[in-house]
Length: 182
Image (tube, rainbow, N blue to C red; front, side, top):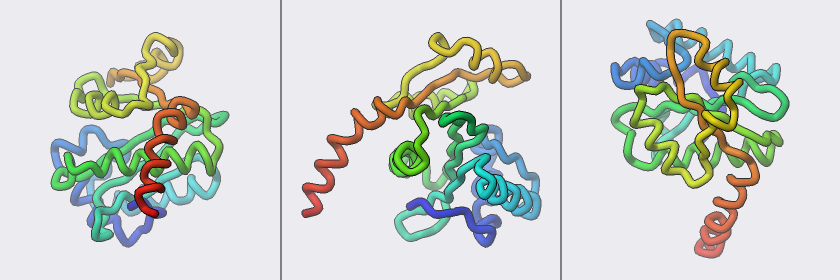
């Protein structure tokens, strides 16, 4: 479901991210498949330098359907960004991708906090984030960080995923899944 970014998938991913209901909310605002290829190449290089971590989200048949990344990494924390193409939204891929990626971040890369900044007008993403039992609203608990992310024209709500809450809410589920697999 998650795999390292591959430049060969850029054309397919660009077609999905260029949809008018997805494009305003993506970090890499490429205006062509070639530009997206170049941005992805830069992101792969950033990952090699420890500045970002990015994965392609694949559907049940291995087709690329979106991306999940963490940027602005600093002292075991960073900002999560996820997008999924319109034909694949509402099918549970976002939740599965987040679970896998957060496991990787918290337990392989030893992050302690993952932040989400979601545009105030992006009600759909805010609702999706709050459906996850390990996501906490962070506007009031991190006012300085909120002011920092809202210093530009776009306005955001801030959410966070603490490692301990993630572990507490997912350990039981993962144990049940392992038992069912036996």
